[in-house]
Image (cartoon, rainbow, N blue to C red; front, side, top):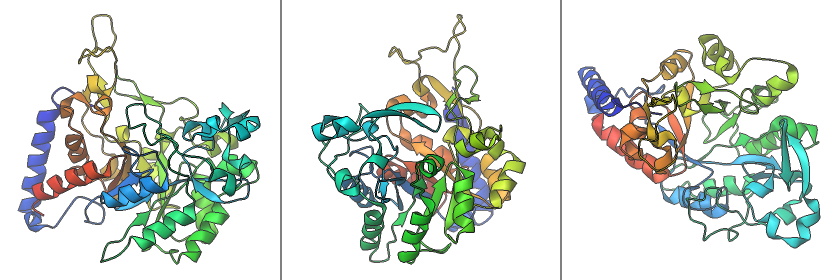
Length: 398
């Protein structure tokens, strides 16, 4: 997500923004470009997943200690119907289940959202068995010494943690996602009613409560709304990748469309959601959107004489570090016009994920998005997101 002159353009954009806001009285701490005029929300994506194995209790505690405004669990179901925090139903991806001999016979091959996967699946394990597993880091560049040490956690435990740490005027919000809701419905372990019951029991069933509920599948959000969930709802918007030769988003299954759209024969892509008509449709059942960040600022590489993207930094790989930011789209402004919040995902610190024009500084990427009026973001490194937000707010005279 980059472009060669992006550094200069971002600096100029920031200067213009500050000048305009100051002229409107914003220099005294007013008139941020967010939908509600408040500072952007920093959501700890899967907890402090840049530092500790994701979606473990310890990762959520560390995220809170780092200052995150909200902690995010992806929700899947156990065999006995308990909602737990895992990004995937397939436990092979983020736990040490493969190393536990007693569970070897549960390995199988199934379809999840049309994708054939082999592994161990949460729906075949009781909560007590899940508690025997340890989380592992899913990124080889991140610390590996904690693998297997920290246990998996339930949604209820996450709510209890957030409440316990909401003291002295600080409120820690929770930002759950219904993960693979059609899949869970098909295996007889639907997520939505359990989520509604837990939220109501927590006393959080209102727009003002410290909770956002997100999903990639519109039918899940619509079901929640129709069955009494009154929290803020966020429609996630995905894509498969970015074509670094052109900067265009690409769409390939299973990241081309919501799986419930596929099942119902709706041939639209996720990209239909970011059109004015798509945003208006989302507004009928949700309070905001959670787009993959290239929908807001995409990236493009430089082409060599062979027509291929150049390895600018000479590390033998072609990735975001070899590309530069393109001019921002109007998505944030369009969503705000429709009355929708915009919470973008996912911001990370690794150099391979930072566009070249940000000079390997993740804070510069955050600030480029903050300056556009982004309402919130998901980060694996909440401390970096918060430090960049502090710089941005100072820039805005706050």
